[in-house]
Length: 65
Image 1 (tube, rainbow, N blue to C red):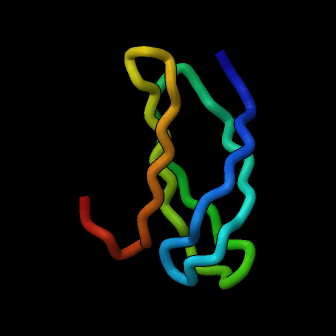
Image 2 (tube, one colour; image 1 turned 90 degrees about the vertical axis):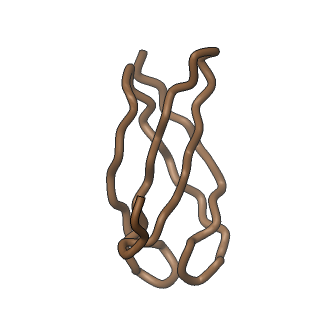
């Protein structure tokens, strides 16, 4: 199940809303993509829920989790 999901997200640094395209894989994933406005690195966590829904969580590079 590789789907392309277009999503509006808010940058954790500059708070601007940006459009991103996320490739949804069969498992949870993490990757880094630079903000289109402030160019700072955003950590994306993509999780697949048990009901098939996809959740997207954003963190700054310095956030600990």
